[in-house]
Image (tube, rainbow, N blue to C red; front, side, top):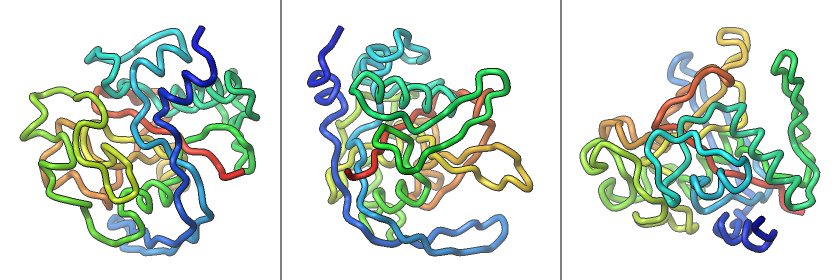
Length: 229
């Protein structure tokens, strides 16, 4: 079994991002809102298949490769991974999951691993700026025109100014938030665009959502976040 240090190294050494604020928008309802953020930690790379299999004992990905991002995972799979990783590293878990009905309680103050909120994800992608991309798309992202119809190993494209790789393209990334409970129930948000998307879909501001338990596709993965202790 890998040591805790091995797990931390595989995560790519979590980066601490500064406090700040971000404006989000929902084009569906033509609304904008501002979110203030405390400093937090985020993995510089999406969770790889190697790390996922080390922690969970299985690899659900359709396109196998240790250094490729794990994909074909539901939101529920992602938060179970966060809990397992937290337990392996002796941290308090963030999610309490009712196995009978898949209801989830989230502890926002926990020291363990979690999914980034949507605001944290976009703030990290844009490095506190408002640009829709952090560089020329072919330099920073795997998408339909350059991906060879599959996800690629993480960290091969240019990072953004905060040292985060693959924030755009390669795989979409699950976020912690419910999208719109009154309309879509428990649907959760994912962001960033994937290897099969056209250029126009790979934007820091693009929002999608789907069912947290049943929805799994081969261009959707996640990265992990933590509160700053």
